[in-house]
Length: 371
Image 1 (tube, rainbow, N blue to C red):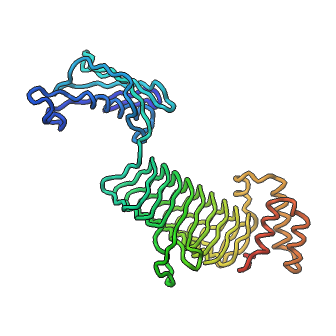
Image 2 (image 1 turned 90 degrees about the horizontal axis):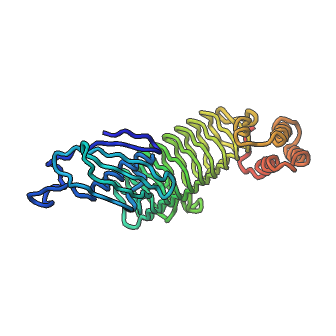
Image 3 (image 1 turned 60 degrees about the horizontal axis):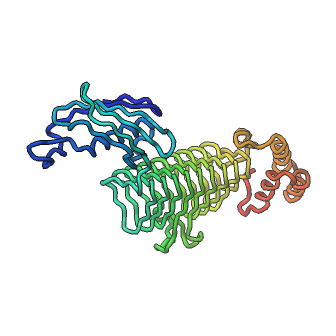
């Protein structure tokens, strides 16, 4: 039983039973509750008080005074006060039984050293788990997998290698990360998956390694969100801060630039490109390149103007927005030859970096862009 005021204090109660396992063989004939377990109890309650839960552990005991033994049948009242709420965390605990003082303990809390692997998880020899990594029950970590500090792999998730995940990634239950590509030409040649930091791979998502035909590597940047059942095909190259919504399927060799949003159930054809801050609306079938900053929708995907909401959220300036709107009209709504339209758009707005990137994307397209 506990009462917690996060960041300030916590109280709890413990009934000491003669059946508790730590009494067996401990001072036979005169069972005494071990003092070290009193310290551990204070640490556990202190973790709740500072709001960190299982993310901290007992670091050091700075002062402990035990006033009388704890015997079977005692009811312990524990009270913990937060002395320092920033690192290194420090708490002070008092233990009483009725009106009788039992112990006073002051200790520090710190992040657990090393990785924490659930006993039901399977971690292969050769896997490298940085400090702070957590692996949940029935998760599988294959050989040649490197997990960066603070990364969490949930229950029943699978991460196989060669795969490198950066720091603070979150792989949710039943996701499959780093599995072999779905390519009939693949013959078990060495290939890998590389991911940056702070990515969220939600339930039942799949991310495949590369193939020889695509440079043997699939890459994902940092800060990306792959929602439930999203799929990232082999050799795809994703930037950072990308959202791939539920059920979207990204084919092989696809390039998706920073801040793009792939809507639910979208399909992106292999070798297509999606430009930065582009929005593929839900259900779009993308077979051509999607220009940066634009919105596409439909089967096959067609242009529906700029992604104005996404650009505002990203903090694009009003001047850049006006220049992009003018360039959009010149490139996609004006008449005449496409080469001359690109030249006019660059001449009129190329001094704006966003316009230059838009024009450059269009002129380097090999599949053609959505219209």
